[in-house]
Amino acid sequence: MIAKIAVLAAATLTAAASAQPAEYKDSPFIKKSRPKNWTLIVDVNVTSFRPRTTTSDDIPRQDLWQFTTASVVFPLPVGSGNMDMVMTDGPSGPEPAVRGSLTFAGTLITDEPLISRVEYHSGTKLSIWQFPRLEGGGLYKGKKLRLHIEEDVTCYKIAFDEKKASRVDWPTGPWPTEAATTLDNSRQLFVELGPLKDGTVGLYDMTPIDDAIKRWTGGEDPKAIKPVQLAKWLAGSFVQEFQPSGRQMVGRNAGFEGFDLIGAPSAVAQMRGSEFDMVCALAAIYRRAGLPARTVIGYDAAGAKGKRDFLKEKKGPAGIKAWVEFCLYDESTDSVGWVPVDIVAMRKSSSRLPNNWFSRSLKYFGTQSGFDGMIPIAFQFHPPTAVRAYGTPGLWGWSMQPAPPEQAYQSISVQANTTSTRPGQKNKSGNR
Image (cartoon, rainbow, N blue to C red):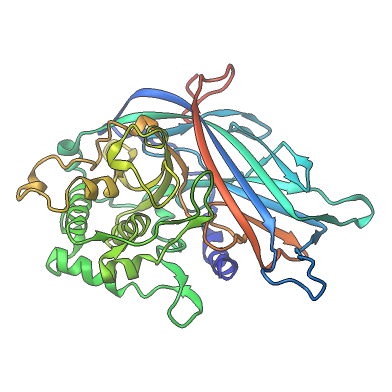
């Protein structure tokens, strides 16, 4: 099913890979402080399919992969509301400082990833790990693949000046390119696109989300209030109706297979689902209301070590969480900022908000004191291009010639270490 989804997604997402967005000033309403340097470490292990049944001679069988060339991709969220990825000098200018290795059948294939020159949906770039063609048209043969990635990032504590930001009006012209991709080209898996009830794959019926927005706005135009006010009203209204439940991730302990998602419209229709469904739903709500927004899947370095009790999760690996960011674009200052909304933490802190919640500061809306330890991994649960994963979306994917295997097992593990910025490297904004 993931393979079918990816094919359709590619057809709608290719246009999102546009030219680099224009440079804008940082938002004066978002203050970043307490910078902390991290090295994010991700391992993806893929093993060929082994049928549960055996042959008549009672010898277990396992698929043998054979192919001429392949590419493995993993997302790079170059910058987010709370993070700058450390950049290094590349052949075409600054590019993310990504290290790692791709190993197949116990043999090193490459330790030099290519970095996509364009940005895809939500500002995503891709690290691309390629199998070169063998001399004489030879075949790669094996049963196991391992991708090891290390990324250097700087994360920040976020202070949001909601009072001043609430005065910012809707733009009279187009949104910045990065934000516009979440609206004009928004075909994100499990937000607007995914498995349908009839067993096919396509665009969701967004009626449940449209109906919810109408209910919360009294049928008025959502843009009758300013963007920050709308974002806060929709988040507060949604969080009081949604009941987290169900399985969140497949796999436990050191690694996980992927995310168990039901799709944003189903989550809103039932007002039930996992915490990751909740994030997909809020992103869909924002977008349908006309507000650029993206999902952020991240790693909570402190939560993984048990330092945030309210984030402890017994249904999946510690530290993996998600939140939403909406774009705040102020034409008067030509500034752009992505405002984090930790809807999951908001719901965990209380199912009922105070009566005057809209007129007071709302915890986890914008201001995030612990986000210097929240490391974004991706903006999508599955890469925004035509690649295949197995079982459930697990952030990575691959393409292959002549064709990728239909079945395989995947496992992803994530960890992070504090680190220092390496000499000669710089953050996304170019500061040494």
